[in-house]
Image 1 (cartoon, rainbow, N blue to C red):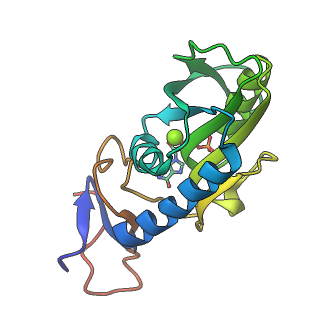
Image 2: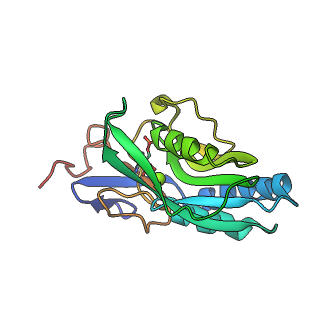
Length: 193
Ligand code: IMP
Ligand code: MG
């Protein structure tokens, strides 16, 4: 197996976005946030678990005064069209009149973000914007605008830099994509062993 490939559970992954490319982009997003939120004392709400690495790198670039907190979204079986009710956990801050920036790893269908936005706007913030490292436009089912976007990505299962595959791979410094076994005959089988 080539050195830059990794196996996680039954799948083999190859590099998709390098650490360097991610860092460059995150730096840029941080600069834009500094410019847009100067003097507004924004409240950042980073969504656990996936956003922890993006959030840590992004916040290192933020030099204006701000507050940082972490929330979690829990899914339960429910009667909504998505089949799941999403609850917002860990939000202890008073949002009244605050400028809120939600920090996410990835917006996929957008259902998680939609649930977040609904919960947040009920608390009368002055504004809510979204920072997300990744967005899969082809998968989007909700009308969500990402204000601070790292990268648009295709409809592939990505791993690393906070994103996990059944709990594994969050610690990887780059973002990986699954190897297509048909595209490369030397690739090992990705079938479960
Ligand atoms: P959404 O509600 O469909 O937008 O998806 C939200 C969550 O699904 C994200 O916060 C991730 O935790 C997870 N997710 C979506 N796409 C991927 C992926 O490509 N790799 C790993 N996790 C993903
Ligand atoms: Mg997430």
